[in-house]
Length: 247
Ligand code: SAH
Image (cartoon, rainbow, N blue to C red):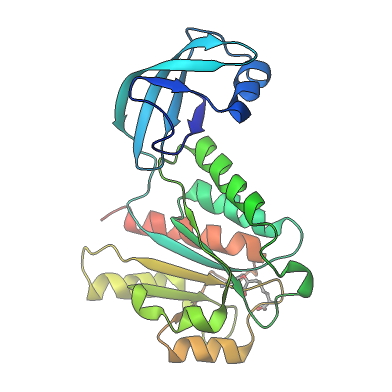
């Protein structure tokens, strides 16, 4: 069933009047008709089953027939700190990260982020990408998008996380599985609030890796192959969710 995000407070208790941007999509793109059902989620975890009542060129509205708690969230809270990437690759990381269940994204500036990728100018597009991916993938919360931060500010803030993981291809990295098993043996049955730090196309410098590990970040490797920067966060998040799903 088609799902749409409408921020909580933007619609009434019984009736949803869809905003202009969705009128065209519902009527002309999806060609929906009165009597058909859609789902709306409001970003608080609630979902609403809606029966469309009017679908005209000016107005699309429907009646709320059911309100319930959405189920599209992983039980593990993962924050992804992703170095800025060129072209559309940062958006790709946001889209796939949202699908897999990441709760929180922070773009970061690191030594090897190339000039072309810098700046916040794409923020609106990033936000749109996250919302569309959340609609498509059945999320019932919209992942949070933080402002751009510099790497050093993030590594210094290690105490916000139970398990801060620094993804690095260097020799001092231990396998991700080992880090997760160690956490499990030291904190049996506890789901960690986890951070993933992923570098830009050229990776992190050794100085950055040293700084992060001196501040308590755990250097981990995802295996013997080198993944593209935009792939690494999603692969790590999928592994974490799989690992902790047995708790
Ligand atoms: N030439 C770079 C490759 C960077 S890949 C280097 O050797 O470091 C871009 C980013 O993706 C890396 O900074 C890291 O955060 C992540 N990444 C890619 N493959 C990885 C792997 N096998 N293990 C851990 N992190 C990886």
